[in-house]
Image (tube, rainbow, N blue to C red; front, side):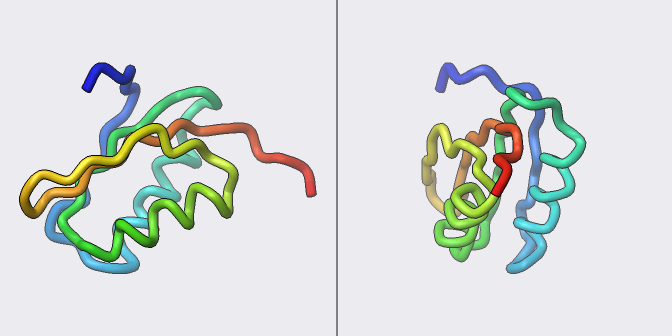
Length: 82
């Protein structure tokens, strides 16, 4: 994977809702345009992380699964006015 990563979040061994809660906190502290790589083992992240990105307007750049690990690359976007 050759995506530029500015941050990494290891949520290995954590279960719903903890991975998404940690992701929310991490993204809040990132600059617009930064990317984070998330490493998780909870299968519910396959549903929760894409929904999180759609709901908050961030870009899910890539996803990958290797064995029990789920990887997500997410770029922080500016919040869009409603």
